[in-house]
Amino acid sequence: MITPNSKISDILAINDKLLDILIEHLHGFSFLKIRFFRSLMAPWLTLSLAARIGNANLTQLIQELNNKIGFSEEYQNKFKLNKIKGTWGNWENTTYKILDVRPILEEGGEPFSEIINTVDNLDEGEGMALIAPFEPAPLYLVLDDRGWSYRIKKIGLDFFILFRKVGEAKTSVNEKDKVKKDFKVEVIDNVHHIDVRSLEPPEPMARVLSLISTLQEDTTVRSKHDRKPVFLLDKLDQLGYSFSIDEKSDEEIELTIHITKTS
Image (cartoon, rainbow, N blue to C red; front, side):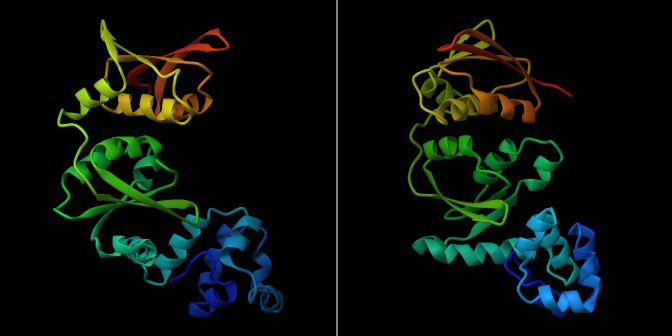
């Protein structure tokens, strides 16, 4: 299977038709068509380095190359999972259900509900292998309260996060009541007020996003911060939520988030 560390020469030795895919993705690499230059560079040039030089999306390039030689994306994910399981001792003996949320995110969707649904429907003793283009920090808090532990491995541009049950849930109340209790949320006229000024980053962002994930549309969250939550604002914009910010002072910021998403 082709990986980021595969040499260009080894890739071309598998199937010379892969040259067309490489040239299509790697900008400025048309010189590979010339056998002389190919013999000079291909033996030492890795796919990862070529992708950086050629300004290519490494994940997409690897996927297309592997698909061309018969390794489906499902096979690639299982291969990577089996490779990393053994690095964490007794985690290797757990069976994991793979959930790849990259397609959901690429389509502009929010994968939180799909993740929770997968966790809720796992068999006894089964874990979840989550594949994402970034670390889902708010998810760690939610699943930790449910008694789940996790391990993280970055492969290429993506994160493989293994989750497995290691204990009992920290509370028996349902998820919404748990979040509201832990986050000290006060609800007034359908506005959920939360004060995260006493928390250190990235806790404020994680707790606000976790609260949002438990609420129905047509509700509002108003959070108090002791600094401008720059990364949270970027994330809300990415997720499609409308919001406004009131900077009362340098140490008192009020953020209002409307759960109804923008189109």
